[in-house]
Length: 351
Ligand SMILES: Cc1cc2nc3c(=O)[nH]c(=O)nc-3n(C[C@H](O)[C@H](O)[C@H](O)COP(=O)(O)OP(=O)(O)OC[C@H]3O[C@@H](n4cnc5c(N)ncnc54)[C@H](O)[C@@H]3O)c2cc1C
Image (cartoon, rainbow, N blue to C red; front, side, top):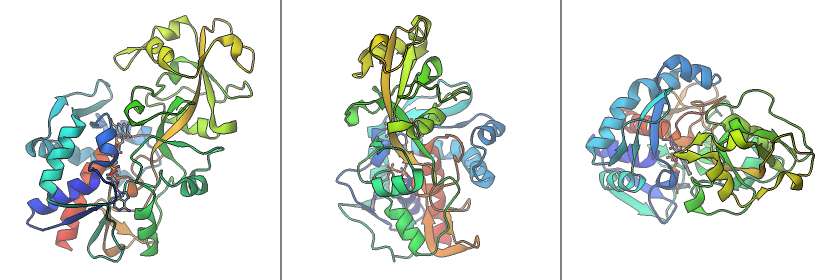
């Protein structure tokens, strides 16, 4: 999302950018996503839900997203819904394949199976985070067991590595990630969305020892619960549901649909601890990591900053390579990638 947006914007401004794409297909995780590009309706909610994020970066996303979405539509990206279905947020849902094709055409020169050397100038880093690198995930995020990847297979931290080698500072929240609790069983790309167990807020949640480890209210995104699960023994949890929970509406269906389709569903009697009264089913879950939330420190013009807070000449970062936007919570990764991808192109051409 970030790299193609940057290239499309640079081309629109008269440049001839080259996109070096490590993978053999365009679109990265954007192509696999639900493709809802959104912002909070009220800036105060953004601050409250992502309290450790950089207010300047958050303000940039909040102020610039609507124009950026209109720009995507102007490129011919197909919109499938003009609302998010969440009263707290505003945004559009795009068709991910159509969006990828529109951006690909606008980006121009895209070279597959290729990576930057790291010393190019200007260079816009947009490699999508470090979730695909188990060692970096272990080092920075500290899950108690390896996390399964719920993202494109190529984003393995090269943007972070190149940025740090050129003197960049880390953003806050290098130990944070966005993901979903998935059944504790293998899953493939087409199952990233339908198998996500998005009903932790309606369930009683236990770890393997039978402890209810998440005492506070689960957020609507459930990203707080997913990150807490990564820190439980074996990085697993049990979602235990009763009849009223099964009837709750979620993602166009009910909790029952998700529970029935989960390959790790068991009867309450099969739990490794005494089931709570009223339990009718349980699902063993484990986080799938979608993208890292911490990364390189940038300013609102997507310039990469050094440890003194000064911009590093000729170096820009956007998308999940740049941290500090959703720190402490969860916000649209596509929105940040779009806004800072465009900003990176504008800055690179005016530097
Ligand atoms: C199942 C799923 C559902 C999602 N739903 C939503 C949603 O509804 N709304 C939302 O806001 N977000 C959603 N997301 C998250 C969203 O997709 C990401 O936040 C967004 O794609 C991040 O943009 P990016 O440009 O940083 O990374 P990507 O879009 O993943 O692009 C990174 C690109 O860099 C390439 N790359 C990696 N390493 C290198 C290298 N060394 N050299 C060259 N190229 C490299 C990758 O191959 C990839 O093409 C979802 C993600 C998934 C997987």
